[in-house]
Structures are given as C-alpha cells and as structure tokens.
Length: 256
Image (cartoon, rainbow, N blue to C red; front, top):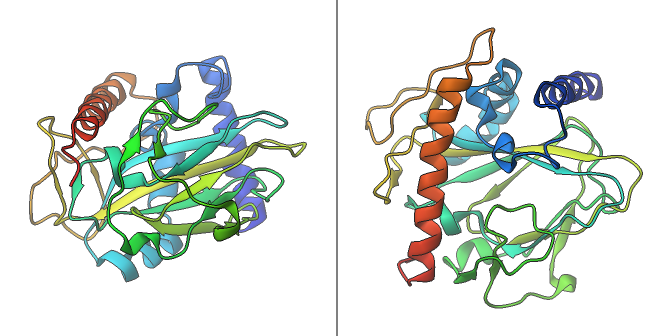
C-alpha cells in the first residue's frame, strides 16, 4: 500500500490506543492480539488484496486468519525478540502457516526490523525455552534452545506500507528500537483451511478468502461499525487459553 495509506492506518491505530487510554506497550498486553475481530480497520488490513494475493500463492485459495498481533517498539526502548519460530506455541499442524508482517511506520535496521536465518524453515520445529528472552515483546518471552549467530541472519527492513511474509518455522529475531520514531507493525497469521489445531481448546479463526470446507475452526464474525468488546474478549480468551496450553505442552516435550 502507499505511504499515505499506511499513515492513515497508523492514525487509526493510534486512535485505538487513545480509546484504550494508553499505548499498547504500556497497558494490558492482550490489547495487541486479534484486533481484526474488534477493529474494522484491522479487519480491512487482514483482508488487504495485495497481502492475500501473496498468501494465496503460498497456501492456496481458502485462507483463514488465525490471529493477528501488533508488534510495537517505542522509540529508544529495549523491546526486542530473541531467536524464535512462530510455530512454537500455535499448535497448528501441518506447518503451513505464514505470517504477513505489515509496517505502518519505518521498520529500519536502526528501528529494530526483523532478521531471518535463511533455510531454517526447512529444519523442523526446534525446542524453545519460555521466559528466557529479556525485554521480549513475545507473550512467552521465548527463544530457541540452540543459538544462532547474528552474522548468519538477513535483515528485512520495511518502509511504511510494505510487508514481508515468512514461514512459521523460519527462525527470526529483532533488536531494540534505536530510532526517533515508534516502530509500528502488525503481523497476520494465515493458514489454509485444511490446517488443524492440535490443542484441547477450540480456537476460532476468520475466513478471509475462499471457503471453509473443513470446519476445523469456529469462524469469527467481521466487526462492523462499533467496538464489540464482548465478542472480542470471548475470541481473545480462547486464543489465550490455547497459547498457555501450548506453552505447557512444549515444555513437557509434546512439541513434534
């Protein structure tokens, strides 16, 4: 999308923060998750045709958005992520999930853009350790048990309106924001409708393109004009319960 369009979406995001009464980096961490079922503008972003065209080329025409997350680093802060794979605590099988990461502000190397270790998407799911990454913006503060050299990683800087797509097994990290502006991005987790969730908690998902012929997920409704907090809390609670369960399963060795 254009820089002007990205700026308008940034304005809407910061209006959402005003509604919350604080920045998402300062309040309830849950305010960052699954806002595509709460905010009409986030629902539009989840269905942006350019994003979905790219996703369809990778996973096929029947696409679910399983979750979304705002990844925000305020200027000159220590927020970061250590080496990890998105698949670790999602409980989705097979591993056909991809994340589209859309920048609404500059995601430069100085601002702490993502860095990927090439080829790790073909190496399977790695064991992770929870609560082991200082200043992490990931819910579980996870990192891979094995370490990776920064020199092996490729930075992926993004201008406002640009997006990247990565596989759920691609090992990546991002450093602190040393720039003068906030680094604002949103990640949408997409799966083909054929993918299953292996947990005991039935997790909802949003059909964003094609049709769902499998029924593996309760389908979420699209938000219209008002903030439907009750529906949002129900969907978010299911996601949070599932995530907590997957953290336990992974720690217990149930991660293959």
